[in-house]
Image (tube, rainbow, N blue to C red):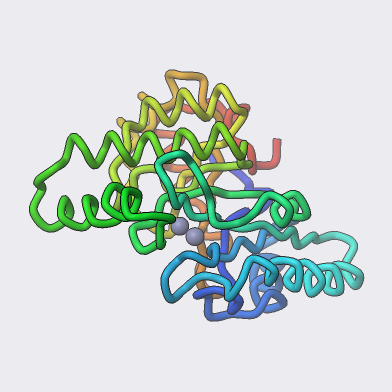
Length: 246
Ligand SMILES: [Zn+2]
Ligand SMILES: [Zn+2]
């Protein structure tokens, strides 16, 4: 069985660390037959790669609106991939900005600058030490999971991006938070790290999924097949996949 993707809802343009313009990303997606994309640049606290300020999202929105005027069978949505910057679930895109956007994605990133010293220790330094030494594993999982769960509950994003990538979390607790808030759990084809066995466990909570490319250049836009394969192997029913043609 082969799924037909409707849209790709996670990608980065030149406004953050992507290499292509919004128009170029849209063209690549249209050529693949997609009907929608979402431009979701990194939040401003993503060190070296985020948008210059949260206000940039409104500029991106204007640019997308101009492009959308000239096309009727394809739509560019604008969102943000916000960083979690505290264990209480603060994110680096303020509500007054993200409520103006089409979608909000939230993800954990090791190189996002937290709010204060406690959070710098728990969300940045502990993870770095853990990555290099394996030390502190239990504590790292506990604080990452708490931060991400709080962010999901407080901000109710459209989807949570690449859960478990580079910053380990308790996937079952994240699945539970997703189901309770109506948040989609992302299968991310830009980073090949998710396993069908894990996803089967995540799905046992009743979780719904979205497959996104996390493209940073035109060549990877809409390359979603590896993600659908994971979902097939994990025996996920099509009704639980948000971005396919049903
Ligand atoms: Zn990300
Ligand atoms: Zn991303």
